[in-house]
Length: 501
Ligand SMILES: Nc1ncnc2c1ncn2[C@@H]1O[C@H](COP(=O)(O)OP(=O)(O)OP(=O)(O)O)[C@@H](O)[C@H]1O
Ligand SMILES: [Mg+2]
Image 1 (cartoon, protein in one colour):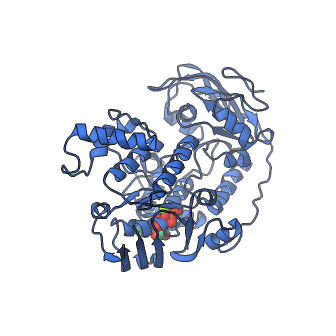
Image 2: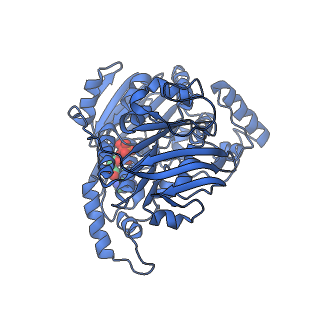
Image 3: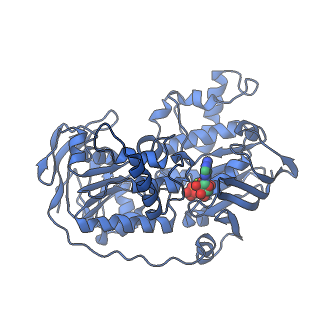
């Protein structure tokens, strides 16, 4: 199936999200759509799939002009999309979710549905339990389910918007293999939306680059990275400079803490983080690292051991006390835990800065919002609702909401969804906080990010915390082994949790 987008225009207020974009998606190929945060990638794909109406332009499928009034209509024409922000999955079982949107002529009953799910699952080697609750699936598994659902609905063109955000390395490998398998079928094609150059290089047959709502270039792969960088950013990236900072006294002390949870119990965790120090946490999703981080934030209970901040025990204290001690926690799932749909940026700043229970100084909040928007280069206005911002801009808002003075900053995937330039900038902001003695602990799935910014790295594997290694003593490969539960690299011992070296 051939899809042509011709001279597409779409604006939001004064923002020209798509400003005359043309692109042709040939069948039997993987087409990359590359561009920095806010370039207009998601908008273009939403216009194609009937989530948004275009201001002007033409969309053709196999040479025929089409205009989809809804995503359902697009999928009836064989075009389906996996969204950047995982959509709200209501509390339901895998099979029920799979059956959403089906016509009874296609799948008459649950039995037939289950067979179809199984058949597709086997073909693409996605093992999904039809009776599991969707809410218990990882992001990667939800994605697999959604791909199978789109295929069962007859999708010929599958669009994936930043699909590697938040999934584990093995899930990514599996996803890429699946996308190749799909595109090997001459009738099918895949559109891979990303701002990650290496993924586009690895996967795509050709690529279209967007910048500020316009196409800056198209290329057949392979293509030199420097060309792609220039098309994306208009210039090559300046090198990043991070001054080193002296480490002070311990800020966070975790001594033999056990954190129980419904799915996994993490026992005997030990970590000391000093003021000005940055500790990175690696591990496959669900290995216990998130529980650990949340316990440090006072968001999970511990049943043994001790957690202290600046020497003061907070082991069983309520969350409020952790906040008072100067701890901030930045969650991974921005629209679930960090930002509130329907509230504007001003409202977010007003809530974040509220000191007393009663009064909100709206004028101050508006001013603050405008200042922070400018400082953090957020593309948006104080009165914009957060859901109107691009994914990368939402992440910037979360960072802009952090309090100025902090003792301990705990973050999950701080630069997830940001392009290279934005994440460099964000890290510069974060590292600057060390000068005030802030200690930083962050989880990342990006091993390069861990090695670049952390002083020490801790790996979680199967609910166990391995001994920290110095970032300068390890490599991507070494970390990869530890994450996969193989013989740890230099600097770490085997066995259970260890004390610091
Ligand atoms: N519903 C909306 N209302 C107002 N502005 C919007 C809306 N959706 C997108 N925009 C704006 O349009 C521009 C393009 O956004 P888009 O989400 O398409 O970018 P993107 O390339 O997908 O970026 P990212 O990599 O951050 O996901 C941005 O400036 C964004 O703020
Ligand atoms: Mg996007």
